[in-house]
Length: 400
Length: 188
Ligand SMILES: Cc1cc2nc3c(=O)[nH]c(=O)nc-3n(C[C@H](O)[C@H](O)[C@H](O)COP(=O)(O)O)c2cc1C
Image 1 (cartoon, each protein chain N blue to C red):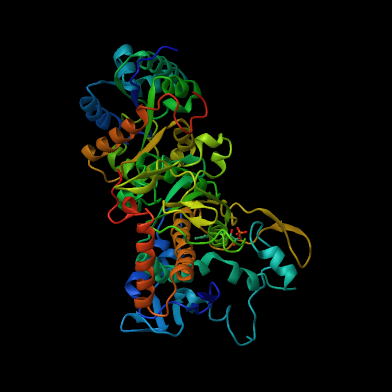
Image 2 (image 1 turned 30 degrees about the vertical axis):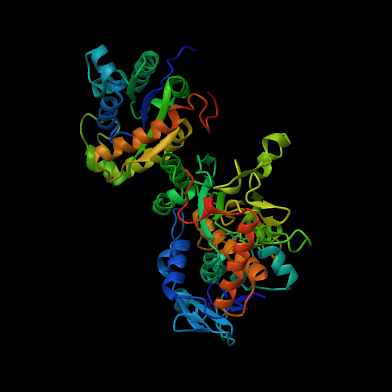
């Protein structure tokens, strides 16, 4: 069983994750994790903090000579900004406490958290509710991605919309070919004309002291059929993906495959007819299901999209109430991004990697990577003997 | 509304974003004619834009500009470079949308200043004490209009003109097949 626990405050000394239950012998490298951390920090519309941080992982347990040990892995990402926060975030009591935050920011955890935990200082909520915590999840995702890779899975993302600008997004079977263009785009969008409009929309929002949300898509190509299960509500893969993706700060909706748009079409225009061909094996002419049927992967690319709300901290402050005096005030303003949709796409990839790694472990198991790979190879043989080859999605992608 | 099957290519954006230079390159590649609303006005009135501005005032210039936009929009197979203020008038924007694909050229204010200097031929900048601030101010006011009218945006800061033209053509070709029913158009 894969178990993951994270800790750390946004302005505390560090973020920490303990990952337990991965097979021993899985390749883990700080470089690969750092590459993912860097991707999370890119993207047009982010504030100054991304320049300060330049996140790096430290692997402090569970890895030896580049491979996982049987015991839990501990990953650490330090908050470089901590030096400026030593007093404000002091572990020991301080003589002169910094002024408490008492004006909740609408759209944040501030108000509900202050009531729930009976707090005088809203900082005690926002330090943990902040999306800073996604850095350590991206690090965990980078480790999980390696295991997903061992079953042939490759995970990509793209930004479909920012504010009122919608891109012509690449179909799932083209995303692999466009990956370079997506990485090169400051808004993770290969449609460069739309990307220009997105950047302009972000600039315009920034000049008004406003923020923007958007839509991101994650595609996982090459995963074998049968990850997840139809048998229980809590084992259905789309439910687990949705929970993981909805856990990302500011994500308010998740759709799979044709999603909400598919619901206005008749069934004949949605469902993906099953075809068979001696060379290709079983295959489909389209992928409205987004690679998941009955809570299980069906071998087609997994396609999930997340709707991200516009970020709630506005320079042009919203109305709020001082929780000590109950007077009408303007919400607290803390350094803030204008748009974090491109970063959310990278975080969404990490969450998909975590869920798929967990599902892969359930299906193929094994205490060591050698055992995991044996189990996977024999499952693959069984699939092939029943007519599923997966050739269309094996590396490199054959489809045009 | 009568229009040919191939949409025209219309360049919008602030002064100094390269609408004329890039427009000419695109016209050559598309085998379209090139037209420029300011040039047409100057030809018709036999006066420079700055002379019209200073002698007759901005409203008269805008009237002549609307006429030029209307006339050029009726032509087929043209690349139209519009004056920096043309699409601030919603009537001009919709006439142009019915004529073709609108591509917005966007450049950072510092580069706009480098490209235009405080040349006499740019009446709206002439005499500004802090030209960069003036450009920023005008951009903040105008960009929402450019964005509302545009079908695509190509950022040309630091780009070679050939590369900028290639990016414009790529955007044009990507949208031409769907025109006039382009995504994001509020009216069409
Ligand atoms: C990568 C990323 C960066 C974010 N940056 C900010 C930010 O700078 N300012 C802000 O107000 N919200 C930001 N958010 C969103 C808030 O963290 C989130 O809206 C808030 O914690 C409330 O949670 P909820 O929206 O999920 O209900 C960010 C979210 C993500 C995923």
